[in-house]
Length: 417
Image (cartoon, rainbow, N blue to C red):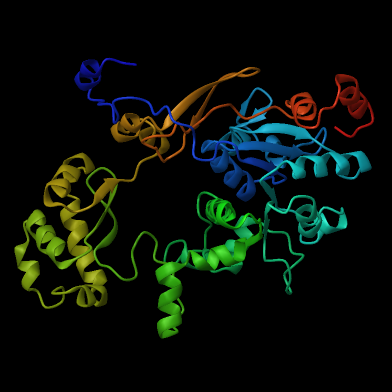
């Protein structure tokens, strides 16, 4: 461990006196992960970060589609796949082959969780539906992730993040007021669905400790999209007014958006009347406090454009680097709008150690963003790099199912793995 005095001298003080040595919270939990693309793999990655054993089932020779979503690449592995598939073991398995079905049932019998994101009804068609698997293993927690739910008029529509974000309203409120609707820069609906699925699975495992029984969890992207509309959805349900696009502005708080300084953009939010008074002092324009157009938040919303003209003129007097310390001193949340080179060189990002470098046995050093949560008593994080396709076939089949090396080779020759 690094010397703490050296850490202080460099401005990077360790957050804890020691690295936690206790077991990860989900150590001993085994997850059979049939998911691919984003939402499901993001969920299983979090489970793996917290210590669960993740067996990622992939189609032989093809694997998870996101393996091919490059460039950029780390050798043959896409950066996209790397982002959401650490701490997993890859088992290629042909589920259209009777022996593939037999292998899967054998794994499910020894599993705590089965996670899948097939089209509704696919698992039942293969004879691997929830009822069948829980008949084999009554303690199994079964979680399915779909685009629009297990039934209804959209049941068979493909679940794609950007399409769901359009149908679910997110794209209608994203973009400049007079511009075209735009998608969010990352597949946020997928990511949030994965996060919620993780929480639901962890909760079901906790309840199982009390009841001894597993259960089925169903989550879909559309339901998740509506749940994440929060205040915007609530605004519509309350007053019936269709929300508009606001760019970086906030529909319910003013000032709260990006403004251009002398050299670049920054963003800040004045979220209460105490901050409004501090903001007026910061600008050197205390007279705004007494201006009847801006005396409280509802009036500032009504007179948003007039206030923004005043703010824009004032912001143009200093650079972003000059403004940010003034906002900090005034206790008003603010920040630069960083490009990614600035994000990953940001002093707080560096201090938190969010970027991890992992040695991959085939591809060398691989960088990725690590888990955002730390535990005081549990060692959590990146235990292994994303797997190559079928990397753990022999290990899983011999250790869990007791197959001989010859049988594993026979399965390979028959196209089962």
